Structure formats: structure tokens, C-alpha cells
Length: 443
Image (cartoon, rainbow, N blue to C red; front, side, top):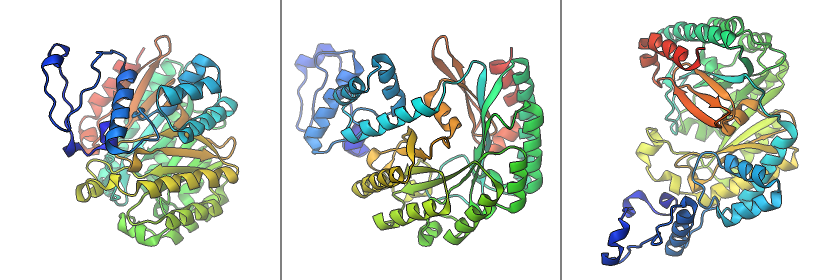
């Protein structure tokens, strides 16, 4: 939490044994908290938060919440109280959230209660990772590589083996797929032949009912989308597709490492609309380098015009290992007021257009320590996104960088089952990775 208020190099947190409190001499700019020795973490966090606001004159809209899943906390409070008024009071008094963030979480909970059923017993979601992109974005540190034919082909062969083996285990366990998400990276960087083989392997190995599941492919880059790929994906039951502009400003696209233009984004949307996909998602980013509030407004308005019925508004996260982090380590501390204004505008604008916020998550080193919010027209939400955030369903992760999660409902507990992140290591260790699947998911 301290990092929300103070740079890493400007503070040091030291744990001190209670027995030496009375002998401790505090120098200037040193502060002592939790002198009562409370074991309740939220009590200590509130004391620390109040001290930091007093020292810096700053506040944080998320209060003492620092984790990835703020909705999970809020939803649990609502379930315990069965009252939105009590939930709001607890979020304000215990977690110190701003009224604006409490309102946002309340809207999301109400949407999920109305439109999203609880996952049924023995249902799972499946994530398949394609960790390749045409180019690497300046802000990205995902385990993605620039696509090269020899790497792609070797990777696909091994991935198909993992899919086949996992499909067998799922049949033995009578697991039923509720949602399937092919992400990355940029899955449509694959050739048409590779996409065909991938989708055939999924259909044949996992025995999916294409009329009953949510099936997403994260196309991402418009320069990887063709009519043939769109038709084949649609034929194999893909119902939801993502085309992610990030911005509609050509100068920014070039600056962040994209090799396409805003015109190509428009053409890709016009092409996708011809193939009858139920949901078209667009990701946009608030806080990209040198973008103004007006630039962001233009991006959002253009995306709305293009026909996206599911829009995720991200706050730029300056990830460790990215070029942006290397060149500007403190970039995430800049422009927080403008980015906050961008998020406020997006929420008001999208709600006015009939969208609802339906899921939320946060990341480290986001500008202003803000959030990412998914908006949708009623019924066009991503079930996979909801399940991965609520952590109340088993997620099967396949491919390099994928993280599976086994849910134990009797204990309300999650156990992570990560694959290796690097595709070269994945190819070398594929036999071991497949055997681990048997250890965790077998009988």
C-alpha cells in the first residue's frame, strides 16, 4: 500500500518486535504504527492508510484494497449481509473506498446477479494460450514472442498433444466445458492451416457442444485477421471475438510498436460484422504515452461507432520487463488525474449507450493505481472473464503461459496449476507438462 503514496526508493518498512517499542528512538520522518499489536490486518492497514494520507496529502480511491480482485471482496460482503446499504457502509468504513468505486462495484454485482448464473457442478472453463504476436508492444511483458514460422509449428504440434491428453482426462472425469477462451498473445497470428488444426483438436478431443458454450478467440491485432480465418472460426462455433484497437490514434499505434493503422482496425471490424459473431469485444487503454483526454475520447467514440458490443477499458499498467518500464520506470506515477478523468468519461459514456460494467480487475503499476473494467450490452458479457475473477470454478490452462486453477468447493479453495511461461521451455518439457496434468486432474 505504501507504494500508492511514496516511491520505493523513498521509504523503508521495518518490522520491530513489540518488546523494544519503549526503547525505540524515532528519527525525523520515522513513524511507528500498530503499537497496540493488533493481529487484524485491516486495522493495521487503516492506520497505515491514514498516516500516509496525513504525510503526503494524497488519498487513494481504492482505500486499503490493493489486490487484483476488489469485486470478490465486495461480493462476499454482500453475500454475508444480503444488503447493498450494509455492503456500502462496510466498504467505506472498513476498506476506505471512495463513493465512486463503491458505486462501480455495486453496479457490477447487480449486473452479475441479474444476468449470470452460478457455475454448475462439474463444469469447467478452458484457456488455451498462443504466446505469439506480430510485434511486441512497448508496455507488454507477457510471455509472448514475435511470431516465427518454425517456432509456431513446433509449438502447435505440442499444444495439440496437450489438448488431446487433457480432453481424455476431462471425459474420464465427466467434466463439461462452460466457456473456452483462446488467448495470447495473438492467436490469429497462426496460419489458416494451424487454426484449422487447433479448432479441430479442441472439438474432437473435448467434445464441446458449440451451441451451449461461450467460445472466445482473442484475435487482437487487425493485421492478422482474414475472411478465411473468420469463416473457419465461426464454422467451429466461435461466438465471441476480440479485436483490440488499444487506441485509434495512428501516432500512438506506431509509438507503442503496432504495425497497423486505425484504418486497418476499421476494416477488420467491418469484416467481422459480416460473419455473425454474437459478441465483438474491443480493448482500449487509458494513459498511453503522450495521449490526451481528447485522444481517448476519440478512441472510445470510434469504437462505439464500429459496432463493438463489449468494451474493456484498461488503465495502462507499466509491467516489469516491458520497454516502457525500462525507459520510464516511474511512468505509472504520471498523469493520474487525466487517466482518472478518462475512466470517468468512459463509464458515463458507455452507460449512456446502454452498456453495463460487468467485471473488474486491477494490476500492479497501473497509472493512478486504478483499474480495468469490462462493459457489455445486456447478455453479451464474457462468462470466462467472470469465472476467472470470481475463482469459484476449475479453470484448465493449456499452452505456454497458461495458469490452471482447481476449485475445491467444499473448502472454497483454489489451487494453481501453472504451465511454464516460455514457449521454448514449453516445447522442451511438453512430456513433463502433460504428466503434471494427470497428477492434478486425473481421477
